[in-house]
Image 1 (cartoon, rainbow, N blue to C red):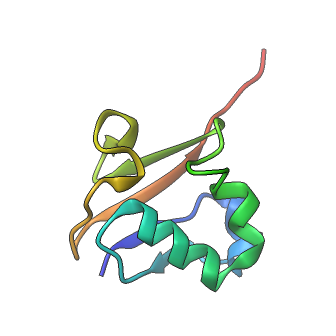
Image 2 (image 1 turned 90 degrees about the vertical axis):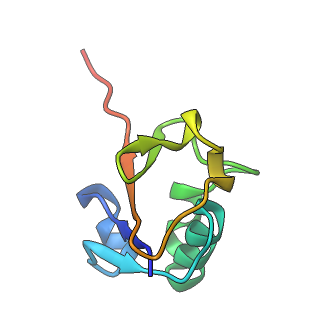
Image 3 (image 1 turned 180 degrees about the horizontal axis):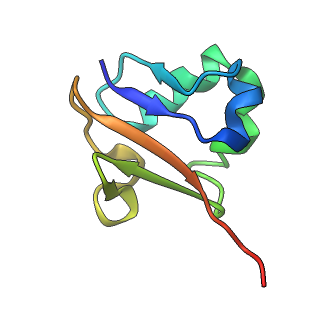
Amino acid sequence: MPQIRIPPVLRPEAGGNRTVDVEAATVREALDRLVTQFPALKSRVLEGDGVPSFLNVFVDGDDVRLLGGLDTDVAATSTILLLPAVAGG
C-alpha cells in the first residue's frame, strides 16, 4: 500500500500523522483518499485539477511534474512525499 509522508507543517490537519497509508494506483487517487480521510487537508494539497503551486509532490524521489503529474502510477511499495515550497529572503 503506498505511503504518503506528511510534512510537519501539514501534520495538524492530518491528525498529527507523519505518514498515511492509502490504497491507490496513481498519485491522484492517493491524494483523493488522503483528503477523504482528512478533509482539512483538501485546500492544502488539492487545487482545481492539480496541486497548489507551493506544493511539490514526489514519488520515490522523482518529481511528479517530470513524470505523469497526478496521473503518475504508484506501486504498493511507493512513498509519496508532499513537500511545501520554501520562500523567503
